[in-house]
Image 1 (cartoon, rainbow, N blue to C red):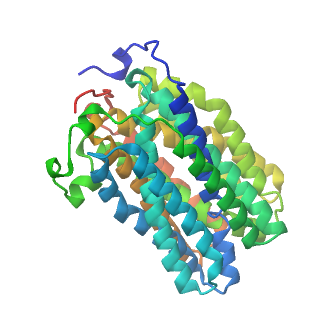
Image 2: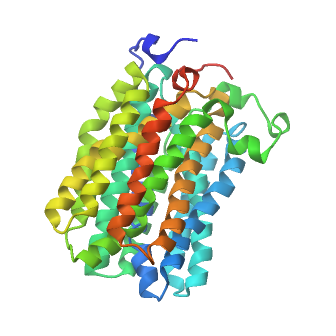
Length: 403
């Protein structure tokens, strides 16, 4: 078994029309969805929700996403990509439009859970459709660019959402989110997808469903565990950054996301190639260290200056960490099981963020939000420790062609 260091880059083309289109479409999917992430907690708070109920908004979403992904991973083992992609995009759009129909917190929790189901569906099939069109020899670079569409969406859209929420209202956010979701659906509908031959040769009767077997891919469970730790640390940012800015009277909190996006975009080509040449170990460690520093800088910020510096460190660190972890997961997974592995990866993200929102949401009743950022930053130290302690087998990257 050769490590990634022994795999020579080929001249296989990465930026095909299909890959380019799916990266752009995925950007719109994430922008449509991520506008709601930082604005839902303060919106629900304005309806009278407690800190625990605000945490539940994040947790219920994660529950829905985690439950559906094993079923989607199972479908991806024998199904063509296009129909699954379009169903997910259409359902996400529908769920977005439903939010303004109620101001009852309990109903919003139910809607959020259903939204999580559709998000779990869409992210799993989109990520699998992307990896299907990336050459094996350029997997780290390719998924790095695909991950860049995720990162930019996760950074630009929240800043846009925050600006709209502070200057207009939540209904305007829903309208713009729906427009972005519609654009994503149109783009996804015109892509030429590639379904692996091993998948085409299977039918439903050939694949036995197991919830646990479709939830966890044994060959790549370790980097998924590391992902869970990383996103647990990140969950406090998702849930509390807007509330933190309101408490500190920082009007320019959108700068955190904006600077984050710029830095993540600039550094991504470098980190993607680094992964392909050197594997995950040093990259994951350095990215986690930068993210740890960013959260401490953020916790002490009282003006836009601290926010900008926190965004710089966060963009360098977390902006490259998640794509590196996804490439690590996929590089250790046989092609036939990449749908399951993608589902496991995204479930680790949603589970980490969801549990973080719930646990730190309860802790927010006793501890200031700045201190929450400091406490949750320790999980990036755990990421470093787990990466350092990873066995050679878990760190060895082999782009598998079997299956």
